[in-house]
Image 1: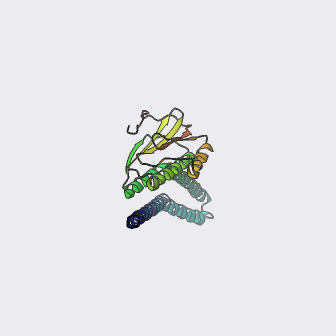
Image 2 (image 1 turned 90 degrees about the vertical axis):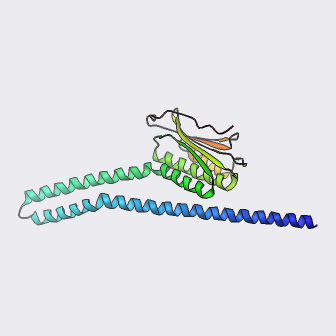
Image 3 (image 1 turned 120 degrees about the horizontal axis):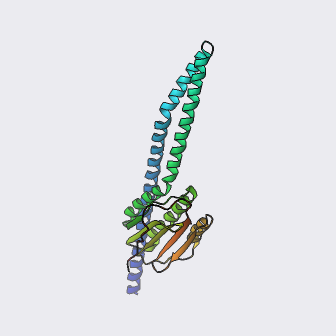
Length: 236
């Protein structure tokens, strides 16, 4: 009777420690995400100020000048209006270029968040990344797969090391993740959700049972990267 009581007490203590650890990890992840969002908002605000602050001031000044010249010097007023139109078009192109830059940084930003999350969890992260040209929708799908997979590894795999690779294989971009944990990936709702997102874009998701990981692929329409295609193999 005493043995069972001690065993139960020890089991409860272990479970309590696991709950505390999980809660601490969750708080760390939330803090990492919060800081990343704040930093991104501040960066966008700075970029927009740099792009538009001076330009809008010039547009206002030239518009006021054109208004004053409209009656007494119509040709010069017309010149100022044409300048306003030109500056506005150039500014619009700059803003569009900036937006494309934000979009292209989507997956890169997700990898940065993954680094912070793994560091907070005490999980060693091994990355092998080859630049691959992806459309915005593909970046969003890969970002979702990366986020879900890393979260599951941290919470359930009891792993010490996580390997992640992104490369081009033929006409596909391939995102692979595997770990050295004790858990096994199964066909659950999370896996089905990732697969549905990929298949909607013509991609695939495979469970690599041997290496306890997944392989996600999406078609690539851009030209191949200049980088050589190498494989990051998991340990034997």
